[in-house]
Length: 387
Ligand SMILES: Cc1cc2nc3c(=O)[nH]c(=O)nc-3n(C[C@H](O)[C@H](O)[C@H](O)COP(=O)(O)OP(=O)(O)OC[C@H]3O[C@@H](n4cnc5c(N)ncnc54)[C@H](O)[C@@H]3O)c2cc1C
Image (cartoon, rainbow, N blue to C red; front, top):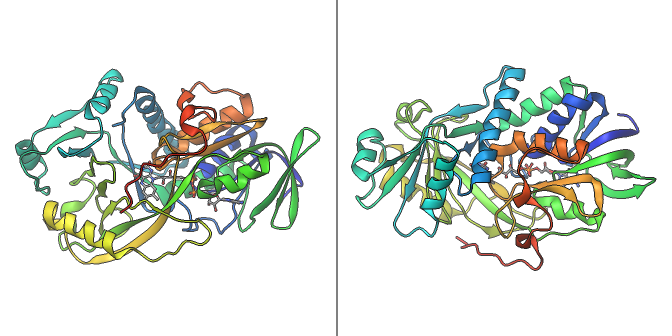
């Protein structure tokens, strides 16, 4: 490790690892990434086999950003020779009681030229016989949807960054950041490191890091979990045969085909506030019960005993939009917050962070993700149904 670097990335989860990779393409050995725990630890947001990637979004800028996300992942795949995106198709079920605006999703996709089909219940049954729903449910099918192999993608970003000359270190918690002579001095793991420019990608710990810049934003960290189910019919639930799916209500159910572990994956948002340092790792039995019940009722051939349930954290912003901007008062420092749905965008967010911190601007439309937007004002109003 050197004593100083041009670019230092704080936090090596999904977004920080991506930022290291994209910075390393231009600045090689001038890039340092620092992680407080061991590389690939399970205390944050990014370490599971799969995360949904989709073009089905409720605004045109999000759909466009999602299109760019697929392009960024294909560059990573081409450079690494590893497949990280698996297209399975995506089925979004629209129950009558939803408070989400289906037209906003469909209109935004149409405006961006994204193909999709609206399927009535009889058509869902014919084309996707694993699902059982009443006749008042319809679905939107989008063929590009699928999953990103999250654990794999994080490893690939870090491996490529190292290959480009970047230094990535773990078990080095950043405890102090000080502005000195136009740059910064970072204290981490008992060492002091100089930095010209900084990327903050601290996930649930973001406000702890932003405090060193005299900045705080309204963030809520919640405890979540996903359940892998030991289905007796696994061959029916491979990525070639079974799509990712979402039950489109606020505290939604969603699921995946078999990938990374020998089980069908299902989850339901829990939204249980927690502290990232004192959280527990025990699964919530009620949530496990709910997801198993959902499978029995709606995807019965996937139902079976729990293989395992894995807990993780989510970081919420009040308006559910990302933070992706320069830190107020610190034009050489940028920050990102994934706002509960960023993994699919990890690589393009990494690229955007690298452009913002290196060039001061980016071609991506990130106006909705600014620090000074009305939706990010303190005090926050949280509208999360706790389950
Ligand atoms: C159950 C669940 C399901 C999800 N499903 C999806 C989905 O289907 N699709 C999707 O797109 N997104 C999904 N998400 C959201 C997505 O996973 C997150 O938005 C994304 O992983 C956030 O990554 P991150 O790098 O910001 O956070 P993290 O992965 O938590 O990384 C932050 C890192 O910063 C490090 N750090 C913090 N403070 C310090 C410090 N002081 N010094 C050094 N290092 C520090 C932490 O240790 C951590 O490793 C889901 C999230 C969860 C929990």
